[in-house]
Length: 354
Picture 1 (spheres, rainbow, N blue to C red):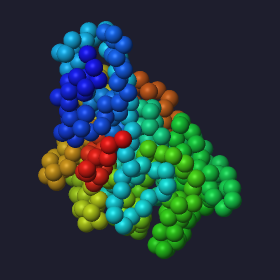
Picture 2 (cartoon, rainbow, N blue to C red):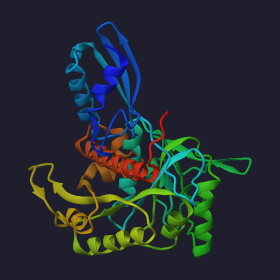
Picture 3 (cartoon, rainbow, N blue to C red):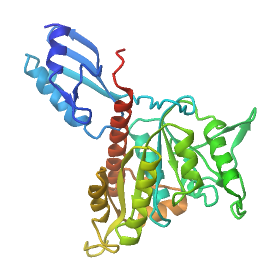
């Protein structure tokens, strides 16, 4: 047995998202053979890959087929988030992918989704930052557990950090009860400052929590940096879906890939009788995704602990990662990461061999 035979076997295993084999994608690394024992690394496009277990299983099957025993195979499944580049746009140094979380209207739980998705990505092994682009109505600091001002060094802002997430918001720069009464150009300036003058360091993902609607903040983000894509958060009722379609068309108009739609507040499970109630209807998010031909990323139910965690600065995904709704956030985060990987791969063709 030799390295070449191992590569030939694994060349029959495809990445289901990218539809190419692992060897030609340069995902198979560090192959070591010691007698009848084999170890190797599979470098996926994200540590949050939702198909990690499936890919590992297929790799094991391919290696068993050429003579290795399952107990003698050790596969290190890890991830490396690729830099998303768009000609003519340059993002902050050290940040691989920037993902915008948007909604057509307020009150759909977009910030709650942004915070828990960021934490879920971090728990999967990614380095994550969170930028609150809702300058006039910042809520990220409350949900992340600290509204204290950040440290400023040499004219640069050191982002706040909690639950493994670096974050910045106007909510940590002004007193909580002080209104930010600014016109568009000033909003544009502070968002660009958050992108350029915050010491983010090395990040796999920067999650940008946009304000509701399709205004100045959305235009600034879409024009200023190479977005890996946008995510639409909606609730199932018709009025929210109508506004979410505006967000979809906004991203399309700005030539930003749409990573998918999340249906929040999809249903409620009574904690006493376990009966499911679809308070705002159900299925509208998936229908909108099908209509517009974009991925449907999942349904997030109404859950009392999510609201309590957000109000107290203890997000449920961080405090209780084994809760069913935390697992739902992790699944949605994985779908977002996978969609961003496909978008980045398509932009970066051909693959550069390392």
